[in-house]
Length: 419
Image (tube, rainbow, N blue to C red):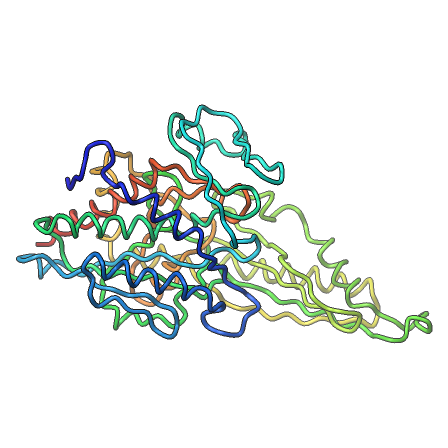
């Protein structure tokens, strides 16, 4: 295995991550531009410089904020199929990603973790994976923002692996493509990504959680927009005339069953999740997420939403509603089955890196969901990120090191098996 020194084979990994985490890259679901925020280019431009510094001379960013680069194949490895590694640059928009202060908790000995500000804690009872990190260094934010390990940990791990290869030019590998994408958190990460031009036959998103896990399933995902229409009139003269659409929408949300919601489901169970209400007396929109691991499970959930909307309007005569269903992404499992090497080689790489391989599913989605549907099979590899999308997001340094080694091992397996 490649090595720089026994104590720390990846000495710049954490410095890279801290640098990326401090760059504000939050995406914006309300934006009508692509990418949704100009600030994502700030990280993209830095990554171009870093990719070029490790020998990927074609590194570039296009108008869509897609960063791409190529690691040329070693001599005698030109026939190895082209694979790729991908991570996203944006962070979750509903928790601040500005002025992130990465905070180190060294030699973690168990129990809750106190964050420096706002009196927030990471509760061990809600984070059982912490028990696997005893004696290790944990990185959090300071309690005022998210951390951004989702997915800047993945970016740091990819760059660190490339750095090690650059320092060891004798190490054999096939041609490897790299991509960093914007707007993944709002479901638009690879909306304009040209899979054919990219040229890989298999890709791996570095965007997973616990060490050793390789994920080959995601939800099938739709969204629903339910628009309630009422009747507005001057409130001083509203008796027996006004129909406030906001109250009809509130009736609808309050009527949704708790059974089948995110807070009551786990594992392979799907859900219906109202995420926002926007409107006024005349018209109010309710946005909902619909998730199920089986595509055929989406329609019954959409029909259930229709049922609850109709029930709300029955309680408010002269109100009405309409529903729009939008397709987001589909379970990538079916597409991955067409290229079994993608999973098999990744699981072997995890084992070579000294871990027990864990094949898992994602209660969410990644860029890999859409890429797989576009013809680029893309499993998801662990990075170590935990409890993401909140103030209590954290990551274990050991997991980041193991993820970096797994990237190298994936290249190794493909080269050995396919030379």
